[in-house]
Length: 483
Image 1 (cartoon, rainbow, N blue to C red):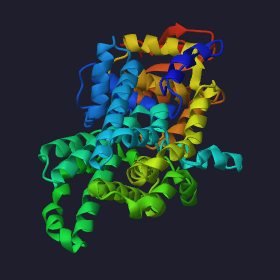
Image 2 (image 1 turned 30 degrees about the vertical axis):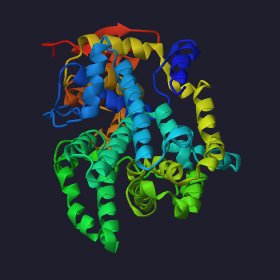
Image 3 (image 1 turned 180 degrees about the horizontal axis):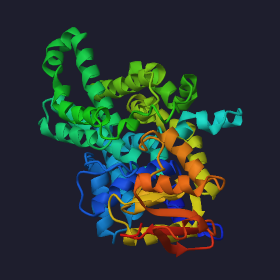
């Protein structure tokens, strides 16, 4: 059901526009696609295409590589490959949750209701909206905290949650002596090379379980045995730290230049109800058969709750994307079977509201068809490291769907984003002297530039000539060997 709006939206495009293929976080998804596009052409070490300065490829990401392979199998259709990966990851989320519920002692009809709760739950975001809260501060609307919301919002969230669930489940088997070490270590490493925020959660979970063992006399020996398990994930964590800390033009991934977009801490209280209330009320009467699974889910909840309340980082919400998932998982594990149907109904309204929202067309889901025409022209002629100067929306599309690098685009991955935005505004200001504009293009060694239709006269007689003209825009290309 979560895929139905994606099938309906292309038919709802207003005249002269086309569906972007994305409902939420379009800029972030085009960032992901900028790497998927490279993978579809066989690259493994990815470039940051939002940085026009030539730098070696340093980025390894298993998720984007897999999406690129799927896109290649789908005839080069990048969005299709990315969404197909999201569907596969969604299946992995469901089966991973089912496995953890079984490890928690659930079987038969209770397990079915518990899985239904996990798959459809949300918080009280619907109530906060009725109370007048703006949607952008409501975590269970903004963050994709729950699996249902993740499926509608962003395959990147779904992939991370799937790997986190399976890593945690395999780690429980390892702790119990029922499985080898390598499945959870490999899964955790892939998680770290896909979505490192969730790797931090996994490392924290391993540590929380070890500490809980150490403070429990009967489990102290087990705690000492597992105290250093997280070190197996250290290589993936160190790689990511080096990536954002080195001089690779990727420091924007820390979120500092994007600004603090975290919801207010108190908003997480209604966002975690009613599943969180059920988990708290029924915790003491929980089944002993699934003690490890319940402890893992409880540790997961408390760890991420501490992150959103006390971690002073603009990326705190990225680290806590799976907070709702952990909360509903704990509620499913500890709620008595007779209460599970009622809890499902209590947790359903916000998920239904989000689905209804994406079933209604919104203007920001669509872009002018001329942008898609320009993107196709660039895809057929642009080479890796060729620089395009274009307005932000078109730059995002070009970085995501063509080999071009762009001077503008993503708020996190464009180095010195604030300066670049100011330069872009000056470039597109009709009052700016042509000499400054030409110097700007020369400084970037730009091969392509997109201008509003009829506004390119100042480039006449230069090294640029018109490559494409549409009613909305002109695409100019630098002619090699012409000064």
